Image (tube, rainbow, N blue to C red; front, side, top):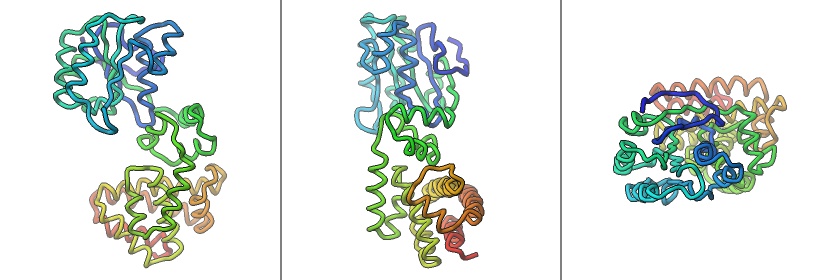
Length: 333
């Protein structure tokens, strides 16, 4: 099979022959949802069967995911799929193995998958979702059709969140503040965002600056943004002493964590600017930043945040950049 790159929308026919499709998904895409929709095109055109695939309960849909959390997909799991693929489809035109996170395949699992793709069964297809085709072996890429999905727009993301049952202000908050990568898990299934925000704000109120810094650079984006907003507000309120503590606390987490902090801070400050113009939903921390700093100063600090992030990405000393940044937030030039 010749490997090619196609730009397709979600409803496009994905695979017309046996083998595999590698789907490159941009941040902000719900991999399980889009994967099932693409798989349904291969399994059947019958509306009832399509709905079963969308719900993940069709007998000819095999979903291959890590057994635990963010773990890996091992060779035995791939072998189980291969054994299942030896049997004829139950109801559909073919069986489809959906792998929403192809990056989780171990090297041994990829090699086992490769053997299937070298002699593909007409009754078993693979749909593998990744953020970058380079995450898979070149030999797998060469035997697969590569499909690149377009990034969703803001309205589409809000619509998806509303469809999962998120309140309108919560959906607008998430899309307006988070990166696509941070947003993706929240598009997989509904999370109690408002409850999580209330819990982390309570935790922050009883935490030292160093503890807040750890939350600000952590993997949980809901905690991360609340902690970043709290650090900015504290620095604006308490000045140089708090600026030194915050700079030291964030820098101890390392350069990659510092870049993450600045990326979140940049989005938070721009959200506060939008809040002042009625373009961001009410949020206690964002509102407090707007009230404390005012529109003109926030706009200037938004650009300072962007420059600070770029400086750290260009390998300027992280603690020095952080200290300068927090001092400016505290009103010290």
